[in-house]
Amino acid sequence: MLSIRFDMPLWLMGLYGGIMAVCVLLLRLLLGKRLPKRVFPVLWAVVLVRLFVPFSISSPLSLHIPLLGEGEVLWSSFGPVAQSAPTVEMTAVEPEESSALLLGSGAEASYNGQTAEESQGLSFPALDMHAASLALLWAAGGIGSGVWLAWRWRKCQGVLQDAAPISNQTVEQVLQKCGVRAEVYTCDRISSPMAAGTIRSEIFLPTRMDFHNRELLEHIVTHEAMHIKYGDNWMKLFMLAALCLHWYNPLIWLMARELSRDLESACDEAVLSALEGDSRKSYACSLMVMAVSGRRGNLMYSSFSKNEVKRRGKGVPAYQKAGKFLVSLAAVLVVGTTAVFATGGTTFYDSGLCSGIQAEGCYVMADVFLNREIDLGEFAQGRANAAVYKVLSESAGQGKGCSQLQREIAGALSKEFGVEPGAFRVKGYLSIPRQVVQEQYAQLGITEKDGRYYYDGALVHSITDKDDGNTFFTASSWPDGGVDLYILRDETGAIKENGFQAYLWYRF
Image (cartoon, rainbow, N blue to C red; front, side, top):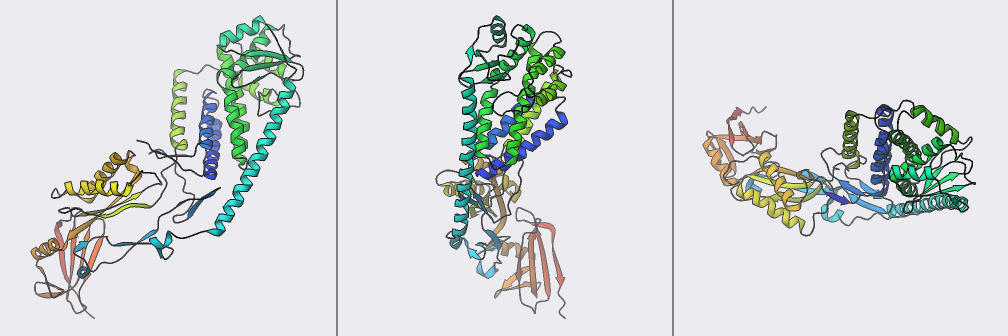
């Protein structure tokens, strides 16, 4: 089960998006000649989702990149967003100060030398000013990028104002064949064809184009119709918005350029698939006819620059219709890439949910932490305490060990809060009542008198009592003792067979 929390800071969204963009480029470099071209626009769409949605989805396949050390404060463009939990330090518990033998218990939270209560009041005025400055810088850059792109769009719209609608039977047949509804115009102020509009789809053709050449007209209109059919204009719109949001990230600008190229290549492939017969050579010639010397690719519409057409033309002769195997491989690649990169890895967020939960008759004490920052709703701690206590109380007398109870507790919390068990980190410790410990010791020949331990009448120097996980409790006696005792327990708290040894203590 997946759970979602919308808490990812802006800079982290851009960083993960940039890393994903690099991975898509590597995939294209390695498999670009074998996979269907439409695969890569789909992968770019996944990157755009990451850049826009501040989601954090924990998934077993998520790629987690540890960016900051534990105990550091995470900062977004608008201030602190999360803080790692305080470091937990283990303190010794003397047997005479406790009513139970605690193996690995007795924790006191501290943060940079302060208690948890004191650390809650920490303030960061200098960092607040720094974050405010970064927020203003980001806003200024975003507004500037938006103004520049809006100016470019407005300039393009001004050019298209002189466009005139055309009525051509070949054009209408092509649009009908492609299943696309669009208005087609001709304009003498543009030098290459383009598809525009999102709600209202439009195709613009340059007047220099030979409208009497049926094959050329069919190729070009089909290409622009494929842009509309696959929603490429929508993708470019979101791409431009991503540039405004993450203007400071050069990887996003690189992504925008490569996304535009992949959209053109995908449309070329779609055209070749739609055309009848072997039209690769004639389609490549049509591209070269419409190439414009000296023009660079444009982020806002289809690119027919000479260099771009040369690049695309090289792939046209090698086109082959993808078989079932390649289509299946492409689907697996898209799903796998999304699972690994689009989901936010389970981050280490050492936040204590509940601690020291015990139940009568159960020798395990449980602490529960969150593996990531997550909103569990109202009264989360009380609900967690009740769920953990129920598991421990129902296990009383059943001989269940720490590892089994940890799994059961994680499952109970998953059911209670509706998130995956991996969101919880459960720590189980042996916590055996003192009376039970004394009874177990008595069976081994260990007695206690006046706060001192004796074994077969000899004063004990020390007792080392531990479980398989080396979680131990040492009860030291007096230096004048002459016997060291070692006790090994299983995870249920029972002393193992042959798990007791006594050794003479030699004083020098």
